[in-house]
Image 1 (cartoon, helix red, strand yellow):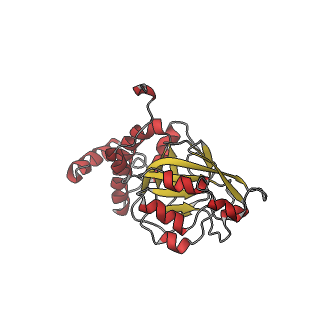
Image 2 (image 1 turned 180 degrees about the vertical axis):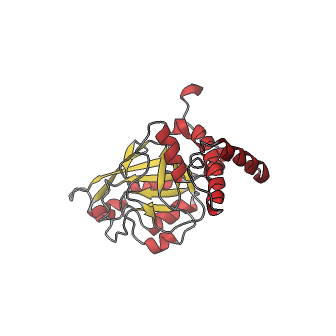
Image 3 (image 1 turned 45 degrees about the vertical axis):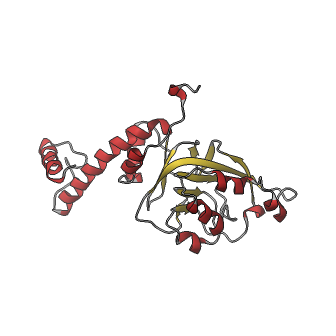
Length: 246
């Protein structure tokens, strides 16, 4: 029997909904307070901006440089090809995260594979390499984040090798089960063991920043307001919370 203390983290629907109200900027600040400075996936952007944020646990795929004698077009006929298996294995509600060594000269997936992920109920896809068929990918409701559009097949540069192992993606370490949060700015990686406390802390941060924005739009200065170091501002915030139910 698995010891409860070592059981894998499972993102609850309640915590997922909390993250839908949180920005990557707030998460970056909360993680920085804990000494974690490199959790933002560098060099990726939404294929098409979505109004709803991406939230899900990581299911990973690692690419290595392609070697010509191993990556003929016929490898896709193999039912065990790791790229295809990853698309069929990534659990619903999870995010497929791909390590392409930040090389966007060839695609790591195209619209058919990404559409299959969406049809299976996955929460998104992230690659520090390229995608092909970006127009079709961008029309899906499921969020997708990548580097640059790439027409060449992955086989020209990448060999899909390992699934659900620790990887690098855009200079961030991603472990299976980590929580991925993606918005219009990009993608943050939240270590699984911090996911609950980060969600709770960031909800409070979002609330205060909404209050601050209202104050700034009303002409207030930021000294003593952002951060809130003056008691009169904190008193105003508490009253704002009461009025707004936050």
